[in-house]
Length: 417
Ligand code: FAD
Ligand code: PYC
Image (cartoon, rainbow, N blue to C red; front, side, top):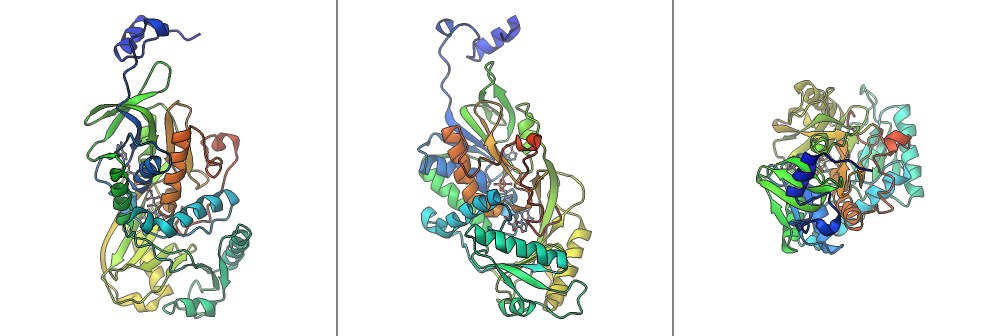
């Protein structure tokens, strides 16, 4: 039987959570919101939108400590693809890719999804074997992916140097033609506008500073810089800060936070037709519709909450880019920035219920969650609304780290993770 001290009984009674038998209690205060989402990035806003649009939960608020889309959603290199190795991940990312294909229409907002193809380059025998394995696994899952010879890589992306004199010669590549890019901030704004139209409250400059739990153990609401907000359910989607927020509810997670950086060049005329990624040399590049070459580097080698990365990592990436596409040697860089990514031991996300009743978690997308935004939002909304995982996110539990049922996608991104 649970035991309570007199002080805790009085404190909880004042909060409306009396431990007295039900008939003696004053009625429970009604939650201000049925669901509160912590984090106004793409995933949080998408979750709110799908809660209202698909699952009929409209009394929803999104709390954002800064401005919407100011986190990783507005800082990433926008690569979208679903060419993951394992069945669980392939299902997850393909679910998202299918939603991307109709997203502008669904939100009535142009998110500028552009299926220009993602080409992942192989530079050594290990890469060749690993990417061919991905091609075969993807095709078995009904996901498009094909192997290109060096010459076919050159035809698909003419700026590539496929000569044998490179330090890391291009030995071929895996091409997912349905992969591509989207405009990152438009994704946040599109979901926000559509969610707002369905009655969702989006509250910026509102940092969550505590998670209040009732004596029953369940979530009662959130302490914020704008006061206490009573909530029926709480979904945490606070990339980079997840451990800090979840600690507020006493939940410890196997997560590490790293800075990951990107940079753009001065704008130039259309010169680069697709997305190219190289795992071995930690570089990826595409051209934005504004004309800037969008370049991503690797994660820093140490954990940090800093939204900028080490200069030597960016320089290493630029050397690699110039070797891959020598015509970029004279391009000037315009600006660079970083974001803080949450990384799990198996480089796969957690989208799940937690041990705290009413508290749900979506995190651990690491260096690769932008592409997942629509799918993640939909599946998280399902999980919150129905209090159970959807079959697609059912494997992405917290318990898998204790049970050893990893979904090891360490080879998935061209980022040093
Ligand atoms: P965010 O957009 O970071 O949203 C989380 C929000 O939570 C933030 O706005 C933050 O302010 C808020 N928050 C945090 N703590 C609190 C609190 N206490 N109270 C209230 N609000 C809080 N992925 C890809 O698929 N393709 C790529 O090409 C790619 N490139 C990347 C390049 C870089 C440089 C970076 C940094 C990441 C990249 N990613 C990429 C990863 C991708 O950006 C993320 O996985 C994804 O954007 C996460 O989305 P989110 O909505 O969960 O996070
Ligand atoms: O997941 O495709 C990806 C990615 C590219 C750059 C960072 N993440």
